[in-house]
Length: 249
Ligand SMILES: [Zn+2]
Image (cartoon, rainbow, N blue to C red; front, side):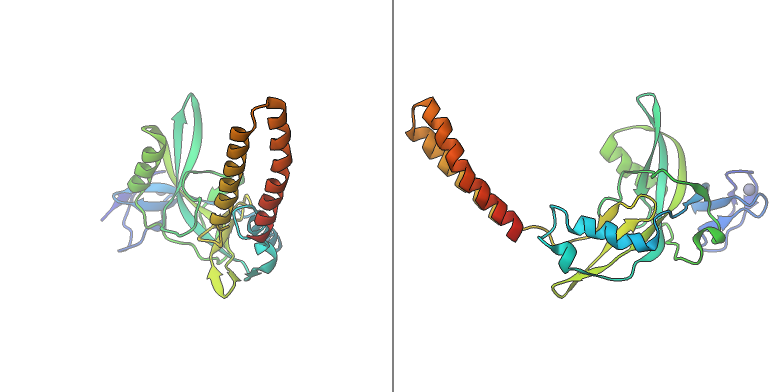
């Protein structure tokens, strides 16, 4: 099978199964997608590896994870890899933006519909990735474009490029289980896979308690001024219980 170089139009014969290649005539980095070739670019990491644990711990210490996860999880050494994304330049409302869709399956959350992070990009070349693993694209660009349309509606794609973005894989363990996560090596953004999340039941309990107490007070007290006073007084212990719950869970 022969394909035409996107840049110079020369006919290229990729070896069987070869998808990432360099045009032998003009040296453009290309990806073979069906019968087409598309430009292949790579983004340069700017987050130093020493800062990766701090980025991950900020996520682990956030409000969606179990309490104290940032202090009780044990982090493994981060390893750099290059993850493939289809980058679609779309025009909407008179302005162009670049939307990324993952070009390989992943359990990481938040990879879909990313904006291209601000940073320096260059044509893909072996020197650009310094021996770090480069994951092959497995999702056809057309499939990724359908995800984009399903989420954002029908739009005009001006250009499609394959981007390899550097991600630090940072697995961690908590209570005998191993969890996956990655930190964007350009923006520092964290992409967690499944993580130890805060249980919702205790919060639903506190909300139900508040509803019952305020409801009863509303029914029993007719005088508006007294109603306000009683509401304020009973709000204090409820806030206290909510605060204790958020510390414990
Ligand atoms: Zn060429």
